[in-house]
Image (cartoon, rainbow, N blue to C red; front, side):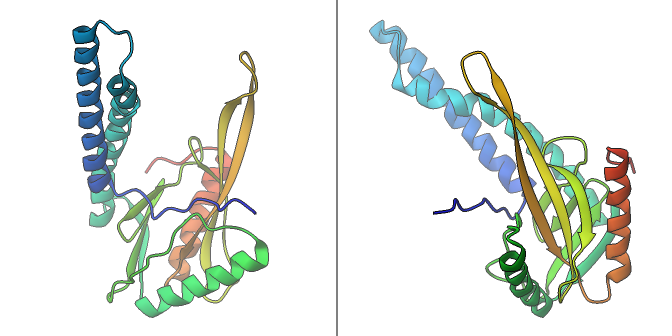
Length: 220
């Protein structure tokens, strides 16, 4: 059975910051409890310590990352860093979901974006900045230099049309105790384009095509 590819509705900086902050606090509490138990019993091991170590170390890193995205999303909503924006109506969004499912079946390209289960009556707003996109409440970084980076962008010929970003994530995996190998994971991010937003969508394609060609995300 083929492994189901992951999907995401994007980063929600405020909510995610609270969750990672809570994870850091809980992790630290377990670490302190484990240290106290080890001192009390004279043991060199503690289940509490092992349970809390990873969240105590990793949660603060994730917390800082998400907190830094809060002003980014706020500026995008205010239009300070927006290079294009449109609102996809509820009917258009439903057509997008149907068209995306057909395109996935035809091309076998899985969409990293996870559609909303409940579509707002007022539609879904899509806002592009020079290095990211906000769709609804979810933010996706669109860097061409780091992380899950954009390597291509186009407008699909489907009905309705969509913006499609080809993305590549490069990581290292251990092959032995002394060697590692590069692992490349490709993803496709498809997003809806509102009727009447053809020019805006074309401007997004041009912007990121230039960024990919230069191998960097242009500064705004």
